[in-house]
Length: 267
Image (cartoon, rainbow, N blue to C red; front, side):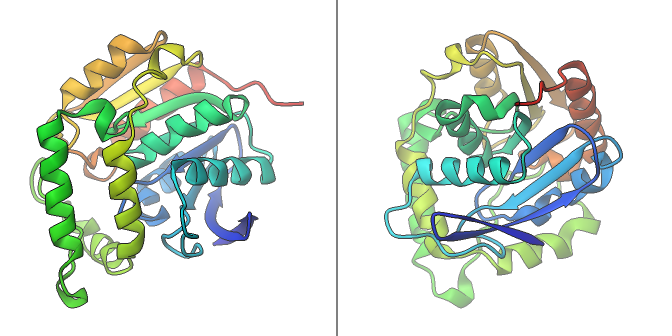
């Protein structure tokens, strides 16, 4: 892991390969390790960067009052420091919401948006009763004793988690910081970026698991209808974690899209 600093926050990241820049932004209760199949599978053609967001992995704890803008600005600092922009930016679930906020605040750093099983914030994508149910479940989970804390959610996979990734998922879950998850819960419940979608002027790729129970295909259709230049790829026999459950077709979709939309370097 390597590090950059953004306003006193140490941000850890992994960087592999050479070629057009491709930045991966993980979901809540995760860190950069979730992108192992993408780091391994795409480094032959791209400079692949996966961060540990502030409050996760080897990055610093969140400062008080940290909000969605803080995550987006930290991601912008990483892209700027590594001189990657404009980059292909791919976000999974919560990470897609961060990627959207990055585009809203720093559009010049984004060549394309790749949104994987994500949301325009929960408020921007889900019915109010579903949001209330998620908030109640998450608060109950966060109130559990540390030894009983388990951020694993039903519906992440179409079936059982892939056997080879079970140890990885357990290791990531063991390192989740409840304080970070609490911040993200509040942010997602109140965030509505749906008004941004019609104004996205870069090409967008939507990748959705066929059986995603967390962000169902109806959410993908909302994105597809709202964003002017967009392509939707459905990953068969995959749930919310399509990047782990079916990494090959997902990597192929990312590769084909990025080849078709090479970024113009800043300068």
